[in-house]
Image (cartoon, rainbow, N blue to C red; front, side):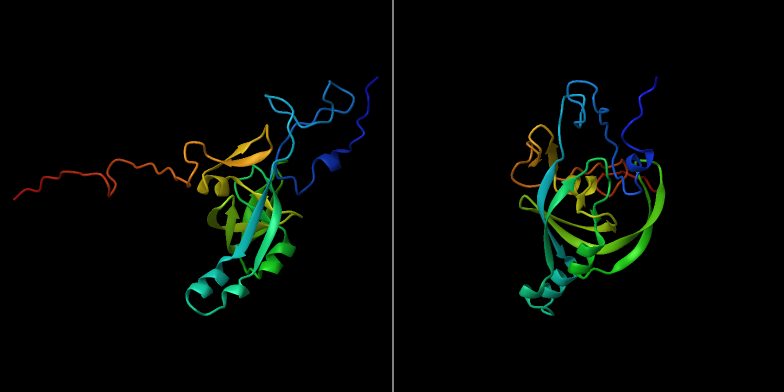
Length: 194
């Protein structure tokens, strides 16, 4: 006789599923119901992040806005290395006073696709490092994706459930740039007939 799962397929395949994880079926294995990787049991990785309206910051630099008028939002954000882009819920977009600049097609972990709003540029501050990025608008919490982690040269320490500076560059972010032959920085010798 086949055992029926206590979870419905609808509950497991929500439209807002942004990552794929394996969860042991309750009642099986020694760590039943816990998130697992090949290395062992882990949980969510969260990080404190300060989000700022980058347009407000630009207006301050131009002398058009007082520094104390820059809109910001502090969050305990979920870090998701399976998500390429970062995500803000609509209420955070509204609190930051961000405009919607366009729509983009998002494909979720369950292969569902949806056109989602993209908010204008925000400043993202994590562990004393700062970057700017447009974000997707959906869901109910702030989610930090791969592009922010890469631009800030941060890594996820799953065992200690934290985000850390790349050990090779602990003092400041270093961005890798690959050059192709024949680019401006390469010296190319060309013979021109007289």
